[in-house]
Length: 76
Image (tube, rainbow, N blue to C red; front, side, top):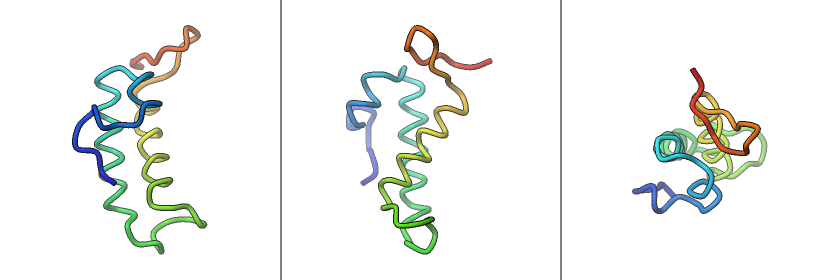
């Protein structure tokens, strides 16, 4: 299910990512949710939701990285 607001994101996203990274996650998840609605578009037996979460995390990791302090920091 798509997320309307950052507050509706899962706790494991809200509790660890900075605000901007949460926005990236939400937008990427919602986009992937639409893109992969057809099972033939997905690899293997993953659900639409599993794929959307993977895409969302990949989008975050494109602009942020987890530091040695266990916090997410924007990359240069």
